[in-house]
Amino acid sequence: MKATLRDYLLSTPFYILPHHGISWLMFKLARIQFRPVKDFIIRAYTKFNAVKMHEAVIEDKYAYESLNAFFTRALKPECRPFDDTENSWLCPVDGAVSQARKIENGRVFQAKGHDYSLLELVGGDEKLAAAFQNGNFATIYLSPRDYHRIHMPIGGELTNMTYIPGRLFSVADHTVKTVPRLFARNERVACFFDTEHGPMVMILVGAINVSATETVWHGLVTSKDKKINSIDYKKGEVTLERGDEMGRFNLGSTVIVLTTEQFELDELMTHGKEVKLGQRLGIYKP
Image (cartoon, rainbow, N blue to C red; front, top):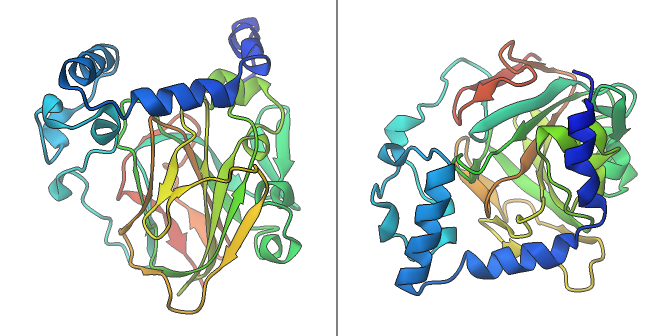
């Protein structure tokens, strides 16, 4: 869908806002544990965001020690059954599909009139990007009301994690339509895995209010000097099974999954479609 005047009006202020300053403040507010304050924040938050507390392991929203603990709440396993189709990959999060399609000659589609370089997205490593030049991608947006833990689409061994500094533009629909190269400009963490179906990359994209990205093996991922930081992992050092939690966001943001050419995205993975953790992302076809 083409960007409207309203989209541009909503997006333009993000060019001048102090992204990291605002996100640092939200980081602090989200971790306040003083009960009257944190209860007030959670009450106000849930007033504007329809959170489905009956799906949470702890249904009492005021039982969480902080707003961040509430954001990253665990869900009852029965609420997110995993697709059991042979060779299927799981959708890694709750959210809405921003885009999902083929990567064409190393370019990733963002919105009408906008794409960006796969090489830039993964931090400039040509060797790591090469396997996905004509593969597939799925970009999924997590709203503030969604479940904020990220799970593995398929089991795999972690080979590399690269932190890539950048801006923290909003990743809402109006900025996706109007900000060029949005996902290649925002701060992000690219996690490279070897799987039984070949290489896979999961990219956790930060956004304003979301400068706190965590992985289960590393914890909070950041860099004080705001430089690209790449970590290689030995074989077997970090192994995760299909459906295992691999990371989480503070508030909400975007996950991008990169696959090889042998992967076929599910027909439900279309722009604007709401998706749930555990449904079929697609099928590996050797």
